[in-house]
Structures are given as C-alpha cells and as structure tokens.
Amino acid sequence: SPGVRHFSEDAECLGMVVGSVLPLFAVAAYLVFTAAAITERCIRVPSIVNAGDFGSDVMDPHKQYLVQYIINSAAGFYIGGARLTTVWVFKLSYLMGVLLFSFLTQSVLKSGTSSP
Image (cartoon, rainbow, N blue to C red; front, side, top):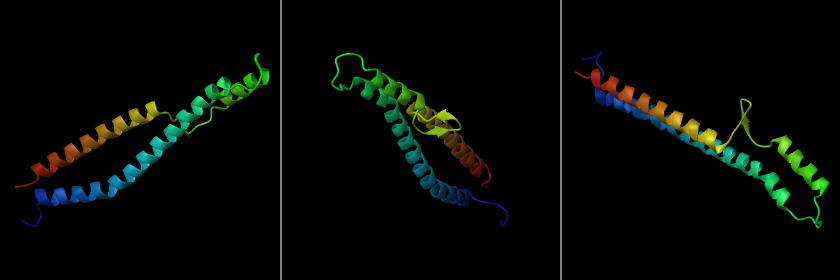
C-alpha cells in the first residue's frame, strides 16, 4: 500500500544515513585521538627537560625555573577548558559508541514494527 514503509526501505534509508555520517565521525575521531596524543607528549616534556644534564653537577636553578615554566604553561589541546587527554578521549569514545548502538538498535526496532 502507498503509505506503508517496508523494512527494506527503512534499512536502505538507515544505510544512507550511516554511510554519510560514518566518514565524518571517523575523521573527527582521528583528529581527537591525534590531539590527545600531542597533549600527552606535552605532559612529558618537563620530565625530559629535568632529566637532561646541562654540564653542571649541582642543581641548576635555571633548569628548575624552565621546568616550572613548562609545567605552569600547561601546553596541549583543550576542549571547553578541560585538557584533552587520552583518558578523556576513551571515555568520550565509549559514550559515543553506546549512543550509536542505542540509536541503531532503536532504528532497527522501529523499522521492524512498521512492516506489514
């Protein structure tokens, strides 16, 4: 009948939506993971500078000043004032996976009930 949608039409529509959104989601996920990796590298810089030997056997106050300056600058990527770390990204990806799974499940269940 003309007003009734069948499961195959809904699945095709869902496939088109997922096919158009999935590449954008993949690129965004890649960018966020890359930014988090850069932030993690920035977190390690003070340790590397502090471990460096600049020719003096005693504690160098200039080196300590530089290490404190790097720590206080808190370099890295931020989203909404929060530092973007890999832990934060994994939590976000887990949340997005749960939301995507629930959306797909609801879409399949709704399209399955509308078929005659």
